[in-house]
Length: 221
Image: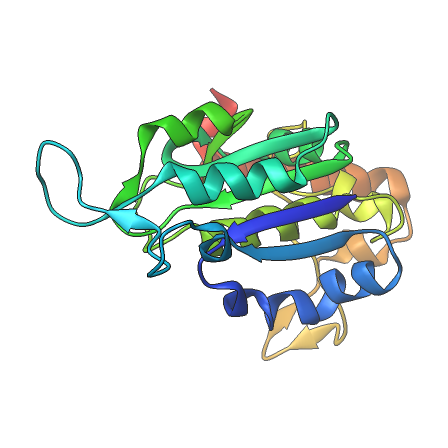
């Protein structure tokens, strides 16, 4: 998979994409990630990429020209363009799975007070990672890249993400334990030590249902 990210702050991604699973996926050629500073595409002699909003109002608005030119310089017929915005569709695991099947993603990070409405015409999909406002789209872009990259074939063990919370089962993940068997008076449930895989599977399912009812009943409605 190829991922291109448009951002005014490309250095924000350096540490995130040079650690852990994402770094390994890049080194193993499972994913290619490139950050584009769309300020480099502005035709303004002072390198401006924003301006005051028509009709008045607070803040500055991203202008369309630099973003249009940047997207058009990298877009192919196989590209899927994603615009990160608070009024996009809520990001879910199902969307992550769908996007992991694409060959090329272009992710646009907004900033300042917003972006010129015409920029929306570039997008195949608008995504929000939650009902709150951030200073820019860089952190949401990191969320998308992390959640999508781990789903690519060969990046992690397939069973690991098939058992994830928010998968098709719409249940939170079951509790997990490791050594030691007892820690500060808290013991590992006996069923997990039984070796009976049918009973373990049943226990895990029941615990998933219990946790979901207690913490996220909305997922079961």
